[in-house]
Length: 401
Image (cartoon, rainbow, N blue to C red; front, side, top):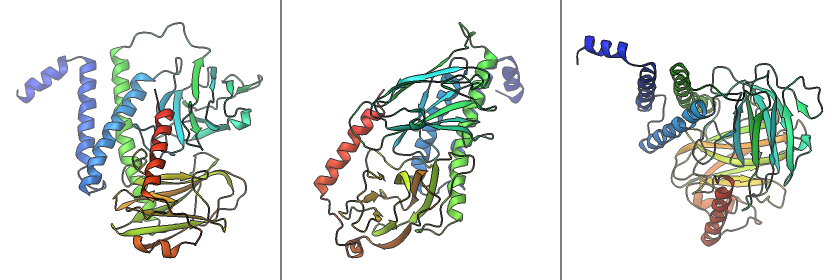
């Protein structure tokens, strides 16, 4: 078909088809961009990148098409075992729902095995052009704890008992559920209901569909480019295989603090990470691959340890190992054959302004035991396999449908 014929066809086709064609072209363009800088050049990492891109399509098409309306909101679970982005916390389940500051909402459910949550009302996701945390509330501050049934309200003028004001500019309500003990128990349930919603929403129009798929395409584009560049920029600020300082994310959660160590490890290399215990209610060490800033193999490998899972040395300090081969050390994090990646020390709800000063030392993996205290606990291959199996069973519960 010649150009004139193609133009005529485009002029005559429906708004919906034109929007869908544009969506598919934009996804194709993202796929082509993954083959060149600034995205990782390693073939194995790139293959994971395409897998990650497909997850982003699922995530943002789901958000834009399935959860578009603040007048009829539902919580969408993201950053689970499929739709990961932006350095998710391995100890969390994340839920997001659209809200409108002019409306009122009831949030209810039951905590079950969840011990804490953070409710954040936000101007958008971090990779979007407009974003930021505008209000933040802890479940414990609302008197809600493990096993509790709960009900609280958002919106209105905030003066009614039990109501939390929605800040101007907030477009979503985000819930981070915390699972400190990875047990095989029922996860939390959260529901949201708009109390000022209409009896019925109108049927979708061609223009509605076009706007939603355009929003989904932008979500994929921005997530893929933003988080890859975020990791490049953060790495450029540091030396590989070392920690330099800590930070709180501007416009992020007030409860959160982070320390980054980007690793570059050969097959026989290991990092010995050491730190004082953060003066905080919760802390953890977690691994992320370069480029995609998703959790590194949370189901198949030991890639996270929190303050209840990691054993302290007798002197009260944190000591952990990052390596490709299992050295038989209890506090081992599996780099999984990835030469480059990110190890994050995160601590939430700090109890003072004191910040830990973690260090990392590169050694040969066969030398690890000679570099650790005598009280270090040895873990057999059978014990490691049993621990991994236990973690898988917990994740099956936390992310079950």
